[in-house]
Picture 1 (tube, helix red, strand yellow):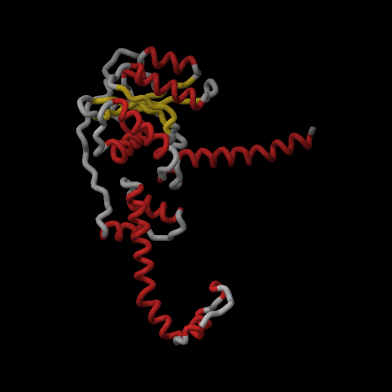
Picture 2: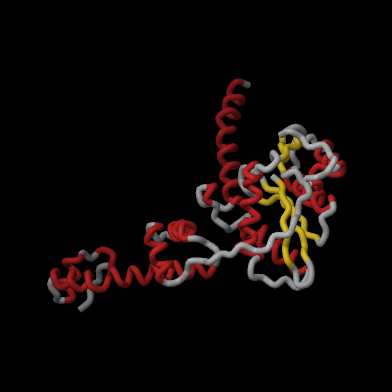
Length: 284
């Protein structure tokens, strides 16, 4: 028996009449099957997100599900991930020295950092600069040496991308020689950028850059076997530009990617300027 009425307009009682079943029988069947079907759907969605983002923890996966229109408490996500063995395991890798703070260059009193990347037969070193507000990587360079040119290449990329007005920007880094040498500070001075460095023995001063390095290692570098410098540049560049800057959810940004966070800031700034523009037009 069929009905010309659209399915969305049928009530439970109406469907029971059409199917010739009692309402009590319908609810007994729903209670026995619907919760299992719903949990299966949630588990399937969690597994899809976990496979697409293999280093996401349960909180980020819960937020990703919410963004896709599926509400699941983060505790429930944790329980289901533990049940399906989807919780990632992390290990601490060997860390070669990337910074030498024992130098004669002037250290200024007041976000950049360098880390290593293991290739097939040697080490490469990655210098990055982040926007401290949006956590976006705005400059980076990868090479097999730790000379000042590694850091200056990343700095020049950041300046070209952001074009900061003179005296509008503070540049923070650790106390490494690459950031204190004359070549680097000359570029900062030429663009009116105020330098700032971490205090001795205080890693929390550069926490944002350190957090990015940890994410890079866990979500891209660890477990990869880069053949050479060119392959490492391609893979890490794709991770920075396509994944980290544009797709990865950041808890510090209310679970938004840096690019989306910056776009929202620009929209808010434009909206704040409109009333002033209207007022100026009225006065004139």
